[in-house]
Image 1: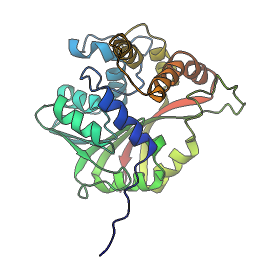
Image 2: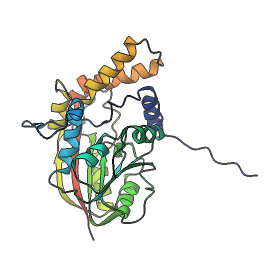
Image 3: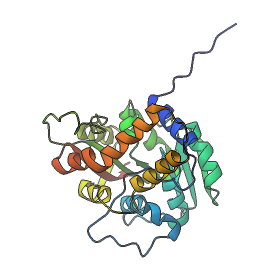
Image 4: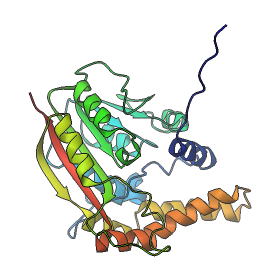
Length: 288
C-alpha cells in the first residue's frame, strides 16, 4: 500500500481561495491594478464595465494595436476572469482560455462568465496543461511575481505558443530606488521581491524577441488616484456591505483588506511615485 504525497498549496492560492469564497459577488471580476493615460477616454467601454474601467483599460493598453480577431488566446493567471471576459467580448478572438492555480477562481469563472468560446481550466504556470503550439497569444498580468521559477514559466509559454505567436506580459516589480522604507510605507510594497533583471533573464532564456517594452508606472499611479472605476472602489463597497450586514469574518481577512486599501491609497502610491516600485509591460514575439 502506497501513500500519496500531500498536495502543497501556496499561501497566495489559499488567500485567493478564501477571498473568493467569502466574496463571491459577480460584480468583482477584474483584479488588475488598472491604467489611466492622461488622455484616456471610455467611449469604447460597455456600461457593465464602467465600475472597473481602469482594469479594463489596462488589458486594452497591454494589447496595443495587436489584432486578436480569429486568434486562440490563453491567459495564465486568469483570476476572477475579468481579463478573459474582456478578451472574449471586445477583441473578436476565436477562443479564450483562462488558466489559474486557485480552484475557487475556476468555480467562480465557470458560474459568472458564460460566453461563447470562453473556457477556464485549473493549472500551474510552470507546467502548463496544454499541447505544444496550441495558442496564437499568451497573456500574463500581475501574476508572475508569485512564481518561484520565472525561467520555467517562460519556457512553458514558448512551448504552447505557435510559431510567430505573441506573449503579452505585465507586472509590478522592485524599482530603482534602493533606500529603506519605514514600516508604514513598506506595507504592501515589500510583498514584491522580483526585480527587472529576473524578468529580462526569463525573456532571454525563452528566446523571446522584444517588440515593445514600457514602464507604465505613471498610468498605474494615475489609476490608483482616480475617483471612480478602480478596483479599490469596488472592493471598498463590497467590504462595507459585509460590515453593514454584520458578517462575521476572521480578523485576518479584515486585516488583509486594510493592508490592500493602505497600499492603494498610500504606500503603493508613494512607491510608484518615488521609484521603490515599477510597473512594466512587454510585447514579445516567439522567435525562431
